Image (cartoon, rainbow, N blue to C red; front, side, top):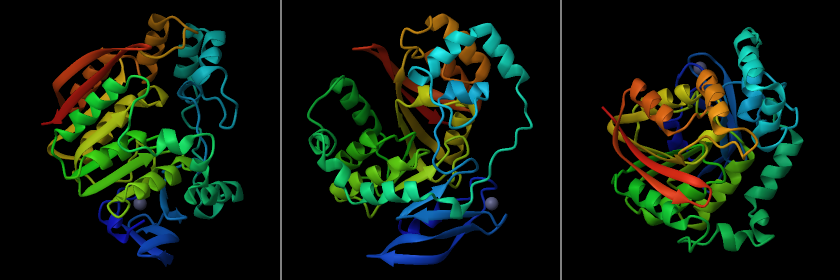
Length: 337
Ligand SMILES: [Zn+2]
């Protein structure tokens, strides 16, 4: 992590500025250290070069959004794809009832900067070294720039061009996953001067950064551990935000859109590629899931997404549907007005 990232990184709890302590450096990069909020004193670690700015909860857990909604304890294995089987077993009406009655005073577990587990550090070292890419044909699939093809490649290219057309200098990618989208944008869009990628699953951060390094853009790019519903980012400091898929893995769509709107500069853009309908893997009828999703603030489909975005202040500039191998995909460009 470059120290220049502190210009736009903020405490996810109170949005205070961060100061950094106990750092070790390598080639101009902060490899380890503690970021401390100057306002609320909360501390966040830099782990092997990556800033981990999660507002609460353990540093390395991911839960299926359905499980989060239902209050399933963290660490419980996912039941079926995205826990759709759990939802099916409970039934939509009972699940909605469970959501409404769930205890609101469950205390979030605070993250402790010293609680970086040995397991996570071990994984981080392995991923940071690039060794992971050397197996199972990953380098060919994931480190080929420009991308040469793949499932729904035309739609991916369409999306990449929609982001590039914004002619931004400062780009932020939200729900980055392994960073496939943002690194390909970084590769093709040479106008970019600052790139941030935010992902909650910390294991992804070293993969994303390795890709940035691979294309020679790591000096302007940062993979950041963060929760998109409480972004560790200063207000109005990116020209464009992008998301490539990922919405179906998120609980708290409205909070996410509010945060996205906040961090974009006035007249900035948000470009999203997503499925027209919520994804249920044929485990549940889409209409049933949609009813549950609307109630619980999960991704409920294109129309609901647009209306939520408009409520937080976005205006739709363009939206286009594409026939994909698994249902319709959509690319929508929003503008902050
Ligand atoms: Zn703070």
